[in-house]
Structure formats: structure tokens, C-alpha cells
Image 1: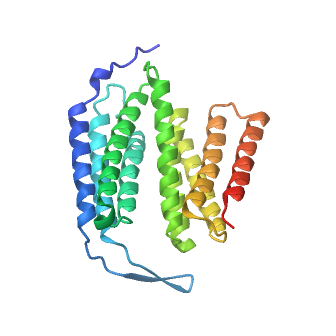
Image 2: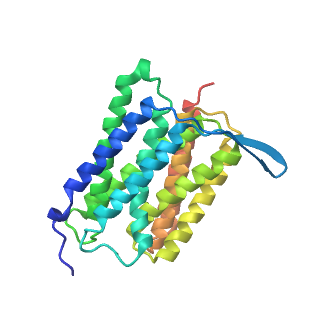
Length: 281
């Protein structure tokens, strides 16, 4: 068995620099309002338009910066799969999505009225980003003494960020033409990070992640006909995402049995009952 990788390999200087740059970028997103053109197009004979805000441009730039920083950090791990770009790409997903989600949330904030809370969100995002990158770095080595704790932490961060992102998109009440691909893409990318722990071959991992994304796109299409608040809608999407990724993960681990399916069914049914109970009349 391979020996565990010492934690002293973690490049904390690069991590600190990346986090600082991201927090500066998020702070600038509060005061900058970049003009963006309206995009009109026709889909299936129906006219549609999209007017992205400047926050989306900032989000994409910060996501690219975060991905580049994470790439530089994880490539210093002595046991990272350097020869396989697909593995390293998966490690970009969670940190970049944290930044994009934070930028989206900041676009909802009235700086004059809630500037202090916005800055607290920036600080929280920085702390969450550090925790996610450190957790991912540790989980590169399956034999690391802290692997189980790090894997659990990363999974919890994935579900938390997923709930926030699903809720934010659902709150916007976008047309299914926009919301379904957005939720499906996010769910598929999150699934890649969760399924990475199964150590299945990358072809199967990407295939099942794409399938989960497709399922979630169908779920949000159905939910758009249901009048739910953003947080409840996001919670329902998270429950379906948890069930889908959990079942696929158990299958990849060769642990999928009837009792496992029953357990996940009870989780989904119980969550549906709670959501129906909390739903405002």
C-alpha cells in the first residue's frame, strides 16, 4: 500500500494569493456594472432573448482565474494524475462554481442598503473556497490519513453550493429554455466531483455525470409548472440530485442493492412530504 502524502506539500502561498484575488474580484463586482448587449434568437420557431448583466462577465473571468489557480496548486501534488487532463479538470469545477455562485448572489444585493452583508458574503466565499481547495487537495491521495474527513467536507460543500445555485436559478423564474440547461450543466459538473471518489474509469464517470445532468434538466422542466419559492425549489432539486448521485455512486462501488434503492426512495418521499408541508398556501 502506498504511504500517505504529507500535508506539507500543500502550497499555501499560492492558495492565499488565489483567494485574495478572488475576493478582490468579488468586491469589484459590487461596484462595477458593465454594459452588456441584448441577445435575440429564435428557438423552435419561438422568439427568445437574453440580456446578460456585467456580473456574468465578471463571474466568467473569476471562474477562469480560479480554475487556473487550482490547476497550478493541484499539479504540485506528487500523486495527482498529471497525465490525464480530465482528472485535473474535475478539480477545477467546485472552486470555480463557488465563485460563480457568489457573483450571482452579489448581483441580487443592493449595495447601499446591504453593503455590510455583501462584504460578509465575500469573506464567507473566501473561506469556503479555501476549504474546498484544501479538501480536494487531500482527496487526491486515497491513502491520506485525512482522506475520509476531507472527502466528507468536499461532499458537504458540493451539496451546499448546489442548493444555493439551484435556488438562485430557480428564483429567477427563467424560461425552461434557459433554466433547464443551466441546472443540468451545473448538476452534471457537480456530479463529476462527487463521482471522482468512486475511482471508476473516466469514461464511465463522465457518462453517468452527463446522465445525471440530463435527469436534473428534466426535473427543473417539471418544477417550472409548480409554484414554489426559490429556496424550496432549490431544496427539491437538491434532493433529486442527492438521490441520483448517490444511486450512481453506489452502483460504481458495486454496492447497489434493493435495500439501498429503498433507502433513497424513503429520502426522496420524505423530502417531498416536508416540502409540501412547508409550502405556503
